[in-house]
Structures are given as structure tokens and as C-alpha cells.
Image (cartoon, rainbow, N blue to C red; front, side, top):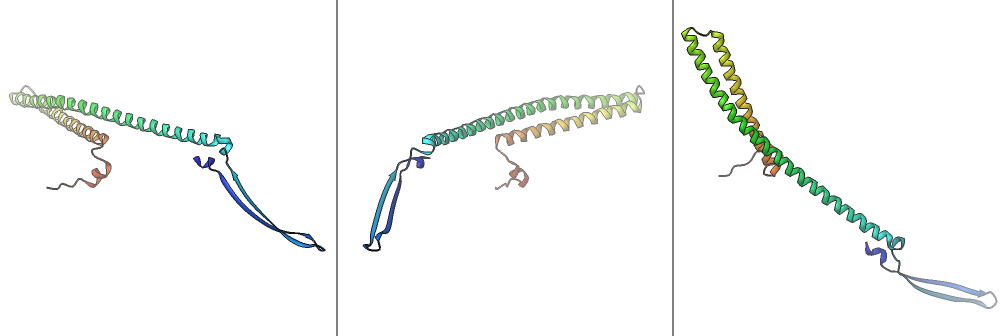
Length: 169
């Protein structure tokens, strides 16, 4: 960027013959040395424009870097909140499974006593199976959220998830 201000040195040599036919031709040698010191392109304003453009590029990269850090932080917070929410749903699902098991046991006892029908037992079994499915889904969501936290934190990447992690004893 400072090359706009470096002086230019020019050295020239010219050789010519002059004279008349009657008097003869005589040689003429000319040596020229010139030194020009430019103020820069556009009187130096081009250099300052380049500097301002480079400064703007650096500021844009800093802005992008800051934005990327904010996105990472936001992703980690969102993943953590999803993980905690899934953890709470797991606890509620475990209670639901426990309650549906007790309901099934009570339905079987009532059916054996003649106070409930076989359909009541099947409905209780259906509730228990649905509660178990909900528990499994909540556990899966919790595991996904945990993996997302690890990914957002940079602990794991797509490469080592897809290729597997080598375990060396």
C-alpha cells in the first residue's frame, strides 16, 4: 500500500547524428536521469481509500465473529433448556407409567372380582403401553438434547459422530 509513494527512477540514453552533407555528420549523445516522486495514486487519496476499505473488511470480520459467538451461545442455551425440559418430562412420564401399572393391576383385580370387564383391562393395558411409549420418547428427546449440547459446545462434530469414536484401552 505504500508502493504508491516510492519514487520512480528513469535512466535514458539517446544517440543521434546531425549535420549536413557538406560539413559531415557528427554524433550527438544524450543521457537523461530522472527521478519522480509521486504523491500516490489520486494524490495519495487512493492509498487512504485502500486503508479504509481494509479497515472496513476487518470490522466486518469482527462483526461476523461476534455474531457467530452469539449464535453458538444461543444454541447452547436453547439445547440446555430443551435438555432440562426433557428431564422434567421423564420424571413425569415415570410417574405416569407407575400410575398406569397400578391402574392395570386394579383392573385385573376388579375383573377377577367381577366388578370390571375385560375391556376395562385392555384399556388399562393401552394406557400403560402409551405411558411407556411417552417415557421412551422423552428419554430419546433428552438424549438428543444432550448430544446437541455436546455438538454446540464443540466436543463432538459430524465427523466423529459419523465415523465413530475409537476407544483405546
